[in-house]
Every structure is written in C-alpha cells, then in structure tokens.
Image 1 (spheres, rainbow, N blue to C red):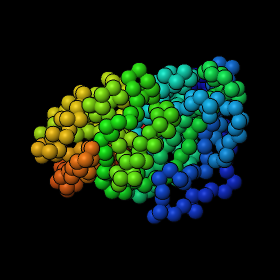
Image 2 (cartoon, rainbow, N blue to C red; image 1 turned 90 degrees about the horizontal axis):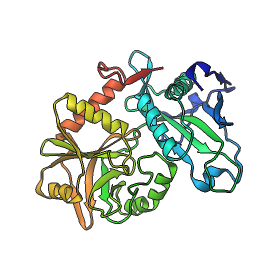
Image 3 (tube, one colour; image 1 turned 30 degrees about the horizontal axis):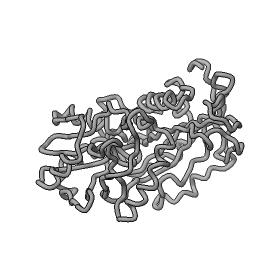
Length: 356
C-alpha cells in the first residue's frame, strides 16, 4: 500500500473519558485514550485502516502470536508545545526500527510514511489527551502481532498492526539503582536482541525480578558469551561519563537495541563538542572507574525513561554510589535541553519534532 492509497476511517466514541483522568496520579501505561488504530494484513497486503473506540479485541485460542511469539512493538511520545501545537519526537526513526524488527521476525513491513501518518491521525483524533503539564507526555505504542489461527510453526499469513495511546508522567520517580548482571543474558549474537520483539522483554522478567528483590530498579545486561562487556539496561540504553568523555556500547553489535533517545543525546553532545566513544565497554573498565572516582556520571536513555540518572551501580558484592545529581552538569544540561526542545521552549535546530 502506498501513502496515496491510505484512507483512515474514524469511528468516534460516544463519550470521552478524558475528564475522568486524575492528572495528579497518573501511573505509567495504565490509562488509555478514547480511540485506537487498527489495520490488518491478509492476502499479501495491508487492508483497511481504521480508528475505532478503545475496546477489547477478539482472539482465537490458536492465534499464532501467543504460541510462537511473532510480536513486535515500538514506543514514542507526543508533546504539547507552549503555543498549543502538538508534535511527535522523531517518528521516522521509530518507523525504520519497527521495520527492522519486522524483517528479523519474518513479519510484513509497513511503509514508513503510512506508519507515521497512522500515528499522526490517531494523535490528532485524541489530541485532548496530550498532557499540558511539565514532565508529562502522550506515550504512543505501535505494535504488530501474528493472527493465524493455526498451531504450526511457520510465519503467519495474517497480522494486526495497532496503535494505543496513553498519557504518562515520569517512568522513574527517582534516580535509578542498577545491578550489573554476571550470569543471565538478554540477547546472544545472531539472536533477536536488536529487534524490539516482545519475547526479549518476557525473558528479562525473571532476572529483573531477582534484582528488584534486592532493591535495584533494573539490570545492566552483559554479553552472553563471557559476561565481560556491558550491553544495555532493562528499559534503556546506557551511557557513562568517564574523564569528561561519554562512553556507550556500540550498536554495531546485533545484541543491542538501536536507541533513538540515546542517538539524540549523542548527536546533541557532539554538537556541543563533547568527546564521545561508541565501542565495546568492559565491565572491568566500568568497575575500575567506579572504584577510582573517574566515573563522573552514568545514565539510561530510552523513550519511556528519557534520561534517567543512575544513583547506584551494584556488581557482585560491591555497591557503588555515584556523584550527586546536582553535580552532574552534562546530563542535567542534556535533559533540560531535550525537554525544552520537545515542547518548543527552544528552537529545534535538528528538525526532530514532527508536528501533528
């Protein structure tokens, strides 16, 4: 389907629930807007695109996604600008990554312009749900799953592509405590670590729960082969500042998700003349920097978390406390700049805001 062939029908809900939202008590990902987007794939092509009232969907007990895991998703956000306009942050990059995930999971791709227009139209329909409050945004969840009603291992012939919207506040209410994982692994080379596939997250829940039972928010994953190299954290990529240089694991490895927020941070830091190294980052190097005090900062970067400063890093029997949040000049500056750019407080010189 070409963008010129795309027609999105809209069925309005009878009564909006937006006035029932408690904006001062907004749990992440549990409140949904009035409508959702749905488009089905069958007979080798994408079918009619629809925006309908938010509702449960029918599901066959033999639906392929449940049994064999063909399911992928994305996450991005819409913001309300000071002048009242709405924008989505870098949706072209999410469209590209969504298709990379689809290819790896043997699923049909969606033309990038159709992916973006589907998001734009749904945000437009539910524009009243975009929060007008500092630190808040409208989380956008595009996802696709296999729908063949057949218990047999093969790529599905049918799929659903859907988009949900959810107004959200901060993902983390406080600086993050993380533990470097020495045994369990998120992804192995040649696997699906680069894809935003549902199973990657399901497999992480048990070791993450063990870390949470020991008062950590998240794990920092290490390589599957030797557990000697840092990869990423549970809900975000990870960046270290050591001796005035931003250091982060290279995304050339197919075990690491290509982070859009991290890419934005690195592009911004490069513009400011900050030294950046994207390479293999050893656990030994990180632990040594924590021991000798050359670790100036560490933070996670992701759509949900945006920039989440790390307060504590645990490794085996050691616990390391990082410098105070107030002293972290660079990460505070980056976060403030991105937050201001997304709501139009400062000029978007990169062209990252896509207006609805």
